[in-house]
Image (tube, rainbow, N blue to C red; front, side):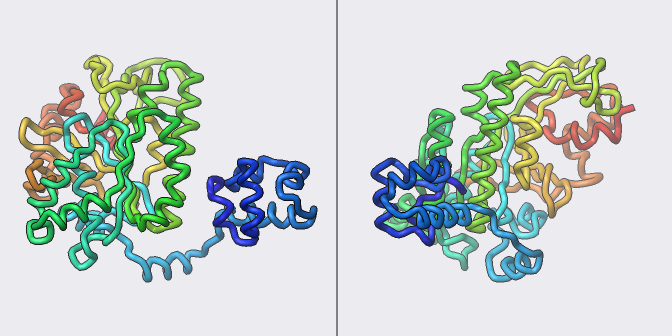
Length: 396
């Protein structure tokens, strides 16, 4: 990545790095943005060495070409999955969250996205024989939702044999590095510095909670120019997260909010879905859908972002007590559903995996039995993945 520090580039002498730093040239990007004359003045070295520096910097940020065989051998040497401790979910995902990929947890407020992330943070610090990664965690909080008190409570109740003393709880909290970023600019700056922190802190899990919060506050998606800028920023953020996940072979977890999508019959091209055309996409979970337009809710940030994530888990309400996890996107697992509750020890699965005919346990299946024309969507209770997955199959 272009944000890599020059001191980590092979082929650049330490004294040259110091001279460049005095001219505020500290990253590979800084070097590549200067012409040869500027670098000659900054380094005080020969023309030939400046060319060698440029070449070394360029080679250091070029993605390495890999074969399928090398990837297969790497997967055999390194851990492939990070178990979530939710047995049925892990079984469906072939072992847990895939290392080297981005996993998204999307859903409405209060469904347990942050609880899930805190639970994963605890798990990552456990020793490998207990299913953990025995490593540190970087937790980027954009909503000021992280609670150290809840972290301690969850750890004490979920693993009482491990976290049974103040010393063990202190060691746990010291391994979870929490950063609160309140603007898109500060978040971008933080992401650009993550590579060095992953190395220096021994990090094997990165959590971003949430990816949608800041961009939805700072960019109005109804304005075309803002939407383009937002998409560009999200693409750059996704590129960094993917680079970190793949380079260090670690899981990256992000949370996402939901949005109400208004659809209905209309004229236009490129947006139709079995005769149903998207008319407007409004960011904001508080937007009320119009039943006659067949409106529904889905994960926020649009298609560009959805293609950046490898696995998407959607959480939603079933009633006041029970909630549901849906595997709506995965390169390994089929669509599946799990019922859970939030307890003192975190997320707890209450029922077995629900798929196929088991959909009768969900709200949407009962609606489906009444007929497609009676199927309505509510921001509070509808399945975020249901419409996209089943509308093409069942709509007349």
